Image 1 (cartoon, rainbow, N blue to C red):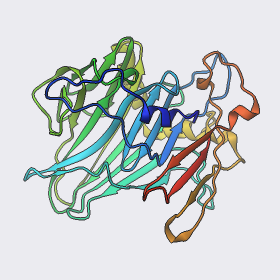
Image 2 (cartoon, rainbow, N blue to C red):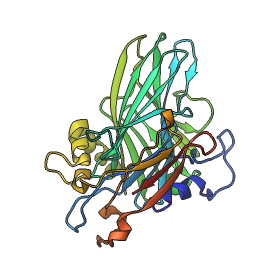
Image 3 (cartoon, helix red, strand yellow):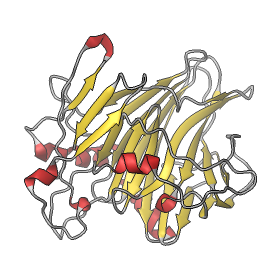
Length: 341
């Protein structure tokens, strides 16, 4: 995808020092296992999205907004803390990745993902469904947490890197929104229900809701969901919106949530008469993966055209529609995925 994922993961941060008490700023793991964006037909009068995202291991990693090389977050992960204080963080484990829209042969038709991670010791399962809103500058995330043998409190952890910079991010938290901005780029994470707790603080290894509601520097935003009792399940919908002001980004996120999971996904996939990935068929999506389980080798092909890639709304050549992206998977390169987007 214009080599943006590799550039974002390897980019040098503009500042080299972190404030006292904060983690050293880093980017997320570069071995991406999924990338996605909305399809939008070219045309000056069409509403379209300028949001791209990537997945690595068990979490949503860089989300780009504006231009494809402009990462705005380092990552968004879902962790859980048990009643006895144990933190379960599965974000660095290899999750199970599936596509939400496949054909009769199981081949993916759109880059909308279901990412599932499991804790073998406790039985905790975290499922994330990820795609973008084709009509807005926002990303939709549905989180489902199923507790195992112990009750667990899910925590949504958001690490802003607005403009690709870790330092000098401004963050604010409330029971309704997590916000961050730097310069004239703003982001807001909204949920379909109020958070059980929220905080904005300097990033540190201690993942818990603090008493701080505002922070500046290398920041981290955390939202707590209601405690899930043993054997029970909770599902929450989130939207990460972007804009030129705090009000704009919040309104964008809330509008996506108002449309809901089914309607937004239908537009993304090109169903119900809306332009979307379905308009690119019958050309299938191909992801070539070697070293897959069972020794198999699958080929899928994704062809992407997005008006958001050209701010002037000009139609690129046919060659420009096929953009190579290479993602090196796990096990020291034995798993290799090649996406042609």
